[in-house]
Length: 359
Image (tube, rainbow, N blue to C red; front, side):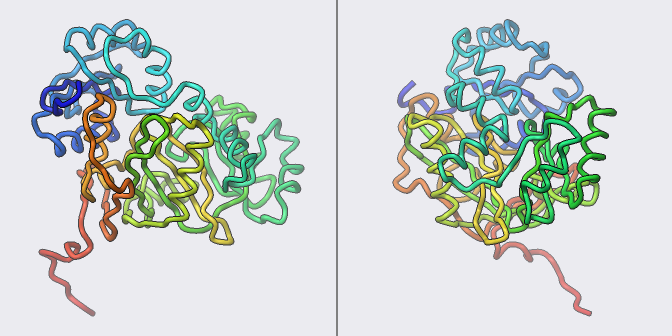
């Protein structure tokens, strides 16, 4: 695999046709327009929107059908693009005749349970929000007392993405009603929820690439406005409508320390969500281990190194020359809206081609 470029490699992307997979494919194609990308999905309608060069409809179970795709297309690298895909591929990887570049299974398992991850981080004095699990609806009052003096709390489901089931609450009856609603209408038990201190400050995202315990590349951004914000009961989302590249050394150090605590031989991609508490301390709220962020384009299309292309090179043991892993080009903006391609703009480009009429 050593010296070959992406043009000589076939990449298989799961959950093809989703926003996350199409954004990843855009980044890969920008890094090398000749790269060959194959997609697969269990939903034929979503798959129809895939940007991959060739697409396969497979069952939800993935195996053995995904192994058939790997063999038929002579796939070199399989890249999962959702948390569920990461877990499935992690379990299957020893049976697959291709490369997979994922964190170790115990790291994936830890990161996919936000409560377990928070306990792990706090036990090692790494900043994470004070959090308690919900055991039953009658115990909500006790949890509010345990989280005092925080007046506003954050109620959320301990697994999943996209702020699913998340809402700020200020009284026990609000949390009880919200959790009861999810139990009764969505079949989500109360024990799936946690209550934690509410973090009111700046909202950061950081994406990093690791191999054998070394961070090879890390970039970060700040969420400035949220996607479909007015339609979300939480008022926030891990997916921004507007984000800006930034560099905060304290945030980068915290993320590096967290990965080294999780696994001193860590490999793969790790995406962090962080928010500042009332004292301005950035706290890790979740780590998506093994998959790229929905907004990966802001990291791939800014700076000197395309993260998606670098990931492929690392996975296939190709040479990578990155003297400084903190390749953050500041003052670049990601602008997103429904049914539009995400845009990446430098700060000095924002008003190009726009005429302004002042009141």
